[in-house]
Image (spheres, rainbow, N blue to C red):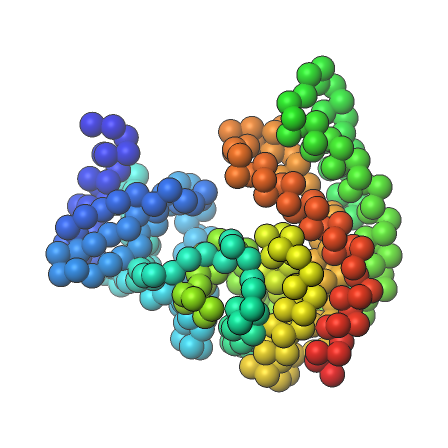
Length: 344
């Protein structure tokens, strides 16, 4: 029996013993980094999503993330329900296995295809509801902070310097490594512009947010938001940063100029759902997203730090992320005016 088959057998037994769920079929889903994921169909036809955690030392953080998901769901945010064990636990630990069990979201796709047309206001309404709910989380109250705290530019300079030095020491670079070296040089040269961008912004709101609102974690059914998954543990982050994570996703920006009209529609819907949202936070979305991406070495550093993760999909994403950052930088003034008009 292979390791994969043994794990499925263990998961099947845990579902029955710990959750009272009697599986008819357990199928691994080829996605996930911190978890191994399974689609479970039980003997009554019910469907579940099982997450097996790879790193047992991270379980306190994982449990806090599940609690945050429950908190959001209690505020009518579309979050799949987590099923507790017979003992009332959020995460079951048996031997070497640790897993959580969630409601399965059928007939949904991720937002990796990009935001278009009526998806923009739908995502704006969802984001407004999410942030309005999480503003009440007891871990931290919303607070104004200098926008320069969005990213550590000195740390970014050091990281880019390391990448350039390490790649330079390699005699023979593969195509993606050679591209990553060139992109690192470009981004290092642009950090002064990122500093000017952030210094020119007003103080912005930090509060508890989802924490990883990337397109794979936003599930859509048609043009509507079906669910959001994979919360991070509660930690204050800038609202502008989280909005930009999904609204300025490279796969959306590179679809063409439609993001310049779509993003204002998203922010208008956001503010309708979350009237207390500050205009400064919304108008600063593109500037924050641009500066943050320019300062991020991901995934340029992966060939050095995690070469096993460098597959074709990651290479495509890396190139798209770099190109999108340059598009945002070049259209920054135009975008700012469009956003300000939408939320006046």
